[in-house]
Image 1 (cartoon, one colour):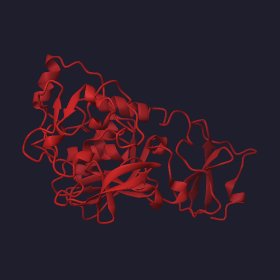
Image 2 (cartoon, helix red, strand yellow; image 1 turned 180 degrees about the vertical axis):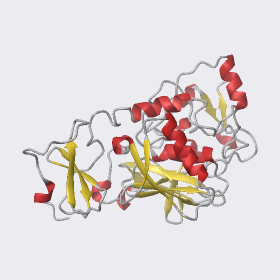
Image 3 (tube, rainbow, N blue to C red; image 1 turned 90 degrees about the vertical axis):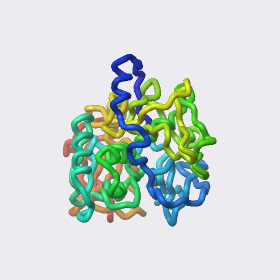
Length: 336
């Protein structure tokens, strides 16, 4: 998806044994931004498409735990043609933690899990403009992909390390696994069992009119990004079942093999985003104000704003650092 991760795994005996060891959707805290609040369904423009979301206060929530920003609320240069470009440059995710956040070990343990199983590196923020901020919230929720500014991962007291791993998945670009466009080959959605005004949470990204892609071959029942069979149930009956009608065990223990496989496509070991260090970075604009840590492209090169000016990082279309001879200098023209 933009991004879904999954893997074509054979459900042999060992896989069934693994399924039986995983916690079910009834036993772990379902990720929801505001579990005690039902918002108003509204239609917004997201990446140029009309998308139905839930509005709660001044926030817009998609699929229960994903914060999105309507196009008309974004700065002109912050709009993206597709969420597939909202990746973290050089596989590096900057973050900070609210000092008053309880049980900060769930954050550090979740980060350690991501670093141990992927090529992503998490770095404590100094003055970077784009970063994840782990803070206290009423539920478990996150934005999807790199937004270019401070983006919150909200964690209520009941949000576990597994829930935090799930929300980091959103922050680096994963949609929910059941959002895959081919999901109907593997699961059935029982809309009659879903809570009132929550049915839109179960649409595929195609049905929602937003961009997406699959990086592996089949829906992964072990994905940490998958809803459990009883997610958002209104009557205690399953909302999602396998094609044979049986329920399944979702899990919040850690990234599955399919999750890791998908992430390795999005963030390969060469630094992410293929070999182009400029992927997803907007061109410099004379009308835009920039802060230290911001990155722009200019005359075919990637630059980063520092406290003393602009630093040339490297040439677009490559993963190489720039030399210093006969190259454009953004400081010659930039006033901010």
